[in-house]
Image (cartoon, rainbow, N blue to C red; front, top):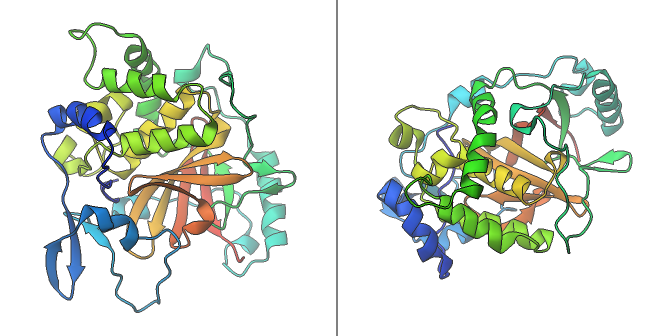
Length: 334
């Protein structure tokens, strides 16, 4: 995507462990800068979370006092390529459409969408991974007849044929995860395999919310890197092995957290990578949404803290995806 927010520095002892693996491949960390009355200065990483609170609201004409990442620009390519899902009723197009009409359209669209073929990396595997002992039962993204409206939006399911970068990841991830989880020789293991095995061992068997916190904070320790700097192109979606070796930007954090949670037993129906428009900073961004305990929790590379989607009032979802589907989103009135 080429945009997003850099992760905050963490003061725990785990930082040193993960930083050794990430630093060997990346060779540096990403600096944060703040716009202040036309002049720039380096921002204190410890103030990042305070500067960008999830429920922060801003007047339309006000100048946002938030941290901007060095070299960040609006990802117009991602924004321009957003597509409206086919079959969306005209009555749903406006933001003033009533919730009843939107809910009816969602049910009609859901019933008319054919099931996508089994993803490549999941062929020959169970649809739902077993629940580790001691974990609470899974919660679905729907609560009864009322779906969770992610970031106050209606979602319309389609396919991700228009997302070749995501299809490339799905074609490679099965073999990469097997290698990361099973290799034992330092000579043959890919970079970051030791870190992957360590966090999997530490998080396996923990309570679900504890697993979310551990995965989010662990991978946020990798330094933020623009796609152009890391991969030599303006927009690149990194596989888990690529991220562990080189790191990446916002969608790359969301991708590796997605597959880490899948390995820990979360089902694909509980996870979505969500591309949003950040109204405060005026840029495209990507996060991971996790549906559990009757709500949607957001794993964000700008903060180790985990909040529900309702706290991010400045996020406008553009599209979301998991292994089988892509959803287009339309804002609805509260």
